[in-house]
Structure formats: C-alpha cells, structure tokens
Image (tube, rainbow, N blue to C red):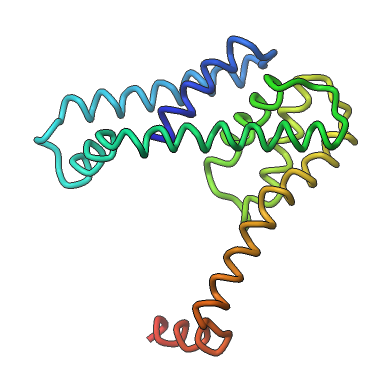
Length: 178
C-alpha cells in the first residue's frame, strides 16, 4: 500500500518539481517495480502462496489503504510546518516534493533511524528549489529531530511502562545467544 501511494506521489512530483534526469529515471524504475508487483498480484490471484494471499487481503482493507495515504500527507504537512517555522521560502508543494525525495532516499535503511541518509536526502530535495546548502543542512537536522525525537520518547516511555529494564534486555540477549 505504501508503495502504491509513494509511486503516485512520485508521479505527482515529476509533474510539479524541477527534478534532475537521474531522479526522474529513479522514479520511473520504482513505479515500474510497483506496477509489476501489482500485476503479479493480479495474475497470481489466489494461486499464489501465503505471501501473495496476505498482500491481496491487505489491499481489500480500504481503511488501511486510506490510512497509509493519510500518513504520507501528514508527513508532508510536518515537513511544511517545519519549513515555515525555519523561515524557508518554499511552498507547500515543495515541502511535499522534499518529503517524497527523503522517503525515496531512506527506502533502504541506513544507520539507526537513517541518521545521515535522511539529512543527505533532505539537502538534495531542498537543492531542487535553490535553498542554500547551509540553510538546507540546518533544516535537515531540525526536521529529523522533529520527526524522530517524539517517536524515541514514546518508545522509551512504552518500555518503561511495560517494565523493561537494562537487566531484562541483557537476559534476553543472553538467551538469544544461546
């Protein structure tokens, strides 16, 4: 579902953003992969294995599909809000394009929380709109913090609330090592 929404967002970005030829090629490649996966799902139908059947069931859940798109929109609005707070002179469409570039740039997980990869993709996206490198680097750090720190805090609070301790983590690691 996320791949379908991201493909649609990429196609929309191609129509409104000053993308480089390399980014356009990457977009078409991703759209082709998602399209082939969708065609494969359609072709295999119920003849596919358990994985294909779970994908089919997932697409039948329209609420999850809508929620997946809403999450993409919410993240674009978060980028736009941080851009406005940072006094960057780019519009709403540019914020969404930058967010899409970051999503593509972080598809393959990097360091923990995509540290570094997220910043590079953000600077790349902002360079499409002529934002000076120094401002783009500063913005990339701020938006990364705004998007990541609340999740880290909520995860930490969930661990504490669930009774997880460093000693319990050590015991679990030792059990797994066998």
